[in-house]
Length: 170
Image (cartoon, rainbow, N blue to C red):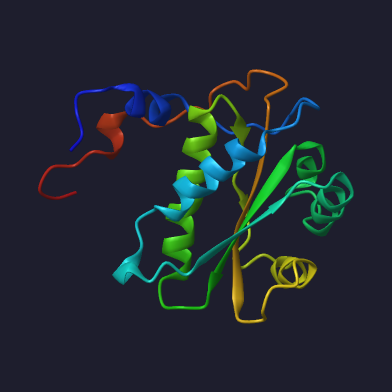
């Protein structure tokens, strides 16, 4: 049962993407907490098709970044990158996306930065699956570089609630 603790909402209201990281390492226990949050995401029919590959070795982070071209070049400077792969089931994109959002929120709750780098439908998706020695039936949903923020990123402008909230019909 949830109480009236607003700290979870504060995480949701203040999280933003981070693409610049310090050289400080992220503790293994913190990465495990983040992945655990991803594991507990909503999933259609409780299929839980996800697998999370945590890359922390600097050389592999650089190679992973190079596979994404300009999309994820900043992965090379992160302390870690959590790669979200899913078994190819009906709702793998939805399930993997829910897990990815949980990863990002958990990282922010721990005072870390992260960014969603697209995977599904990207030309590099197959190369990354191969790079990670994952089975061919796995689909890349996202890459989530994690680290200590090097700077405060300006908050992206979001639409006002009144622009997106509709009651009963649009």
